[in-house]
Image: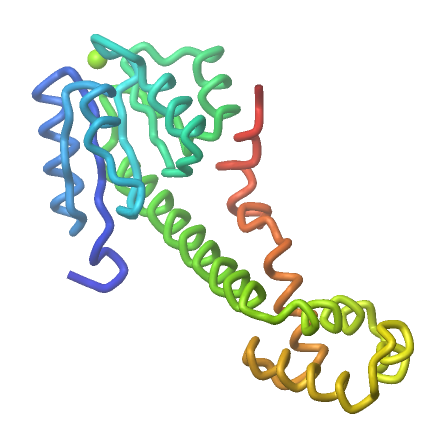
Length: 223
Ligand SMILES: [Mg+2]
């Protein structure tokens, strides 16, 4: 098993045992972990959001639909990529699914290679998003560990102010400003203010605004 597929899990929801098993077997054959559920309710009760991967769900189920599963995930703030497979695919449903941010709508019976390609893409996207969120979290916790005094200096530093200007504005000695500036760079593990600004910029980026990802998660804020 390659590291690319190491810990990712394909969650499968289908009320049809044969379909469920074939998707599960397909995911396993592609090197992923695979866990199958008969209903969205069962999946939602069992799903641990810290597990990376993607969901492949049937559209029409006995209980909640594939779309309702996805809506529930979004409401819970879970951005697990979702692939909806449907034997009743029609244009309005497809549009609604895409708008809700599912990776794609697959007609049933599906082409196994195409489905696996979609799964790979979904999992790669999930990994990128998780890596990005870890990075932002890491930067934020470093920022929170700065003293209040250092945070005030930081704010002016990223505005491009010189040590002298900062000293004047905060009514501090130049030495103090220099010391705090060094502390800030050290604690955030950067070697220059330029690097510092770049680092802070990352925390404001939208991880899913990359062109490749935009189609997938771009509309998750829809009412
Ligand atoms: Mg069904």
